Image 1 (cartoon, rainbow, N blue to C red):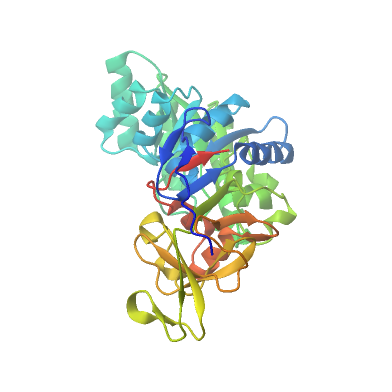
Image 2: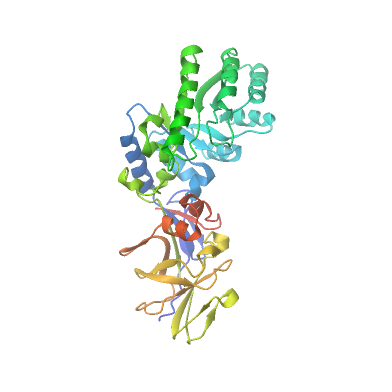
Length: 391
């Protein structure tokens, strides 16, 4: 075992050229070319005149929102969705010119002024929102764009279908209110086609009423990644891919519909090595005890970085192209790995937590299964203290 000191890693979370240095050997790599590959595949799958709204909320599911927003904008994506005003403002300050929809409800209504000041499009879901926007049209003497959210079965935000007809009639009588979009969301598009069909039928009726009876002109959108893959009837005028943009599966075996590329890899390095005797216990609670002379590696990754404590004694990492088990409880800042038998293992060796090394791969879905959660949560849990390297 060689004890060589690894150098600090250079990276940049803005671009490859504007580099920063981080000294803790723990970083996430984001491959822009794979992101663009996924976008291209989705474009090819949908109808030529169907638009794409790239869902880049939560820092693009922890992948780096600004960088990927710039890439999406560069290849002609003119609609982006975020969750909060703060995210929208951050994108604007970074120079993103695309249309930005705030998917979350804006409360209190006074914050509509903040959205408009940054050219962000709000979502409205009730009469209170409509009246607040109407008041702003008078105050600002300008038309105001917005999207109307219809709750067809998600139960989160949005007007119930019966209330939607009342809202649409009100909207149609206020010329200064410009409803440029109307949308809904599918909670079980991946698992329950019957319920999704009920939602789809309900939403379609609302769309027809708004267009045919009231003469309103707008973009209708409903399909998240799962619906996009499962049912082309859900596509309407625009689709809203989120998880699939990052090359992660919206449901089991979705790669049979579209084979995408994972955009994110998570890497670290061995920062400490030691040989220990049989009967040696590792980490808090002594949940792992060696049964032979072993070589243990310590990596600077812990649950504060988003490497879940639920992975303790259950997950593998890759070292020199081989799977090595995580041993003992994962701690806040460090994790121990059994590297016994890894020929030539050395201080500074690269360790892959998520991604490819040699012929082996650790997939996000693998970690999600161990944690009894979904791939969304695994990537979204990666802490902001882990630098993002754009490759």
